[in-house]
Image 1 (spheres, helix red, strand yellow):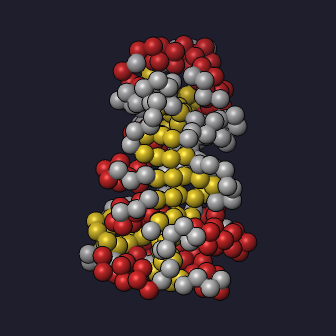
Image 2: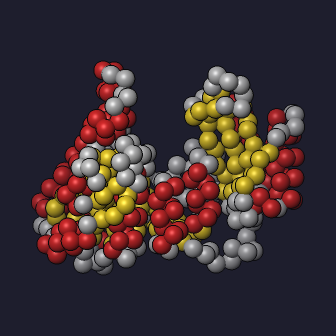
Image 3: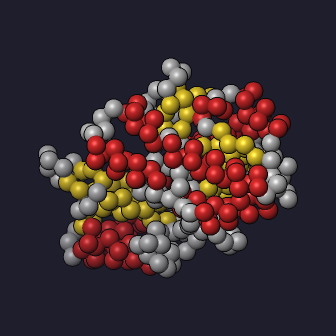
Length: 338
């Protein structure tokens, strides 16, 4: 048994969907049954949000969930049809059909339970069960969605329920020391701990949904992150990383962009303007030498003192958006992350 998840970039067009089906067929050489969780194709979710925004205020979150949940259903049905044409017994299901019960928080729900009878019945009949990610149903019977990156959450929750490993596939080859779009020389990590990944995710590294990381951490589920379109080794997310005590205390850098809101410089929302640049590592906030290095590097880069804030596993600083690349590069060089 294995749970795989394929992101929207992996399912963006017919050619890519066929490549995903080839990977699934290969996985069946080593596993008798697969649960495959899918996101909406390409930028479908963004297009649906834009459609709604062009016609209404989008304040009715229940109806937004009705709208946004359709994207994953398209992916699931098409992928299942492709697999069946290849001779692989497959059937697609949405969150309602599999009994993925969630809270009633529309557009930001949390999974409460999964109907054991429904998913086991499906697995008894089909080699591949294709599941719509990102969605479920509330106890009141309303369709709900799990927030951005919610397909990760669906996949890890199903892996926990089935007691198996989880693989998350996207157009990114794993977890990197920095966002490769900001710093092209970033290095891929072979392994990363739950705590480190959770901190990176919360601070802007949009690779694995933070809720999915929490589920994995609380239930000790190994999660493998890799590229759909490459056989290159990915990154394993797990509890303890061998040699963790001896490696660099800074494992990676995360960036979250903001713009000031009315009310002063201390109030921000995501967008353009400034960015929170964070160094992440186990118990990093307690390391005075790392804090001093970050202060010196960024103060020199900005030609003025910087204010640092710290948590247990991170040290952060606000920077102007136009200095992000240079700041990340300077920190990455200082902590040998390139």
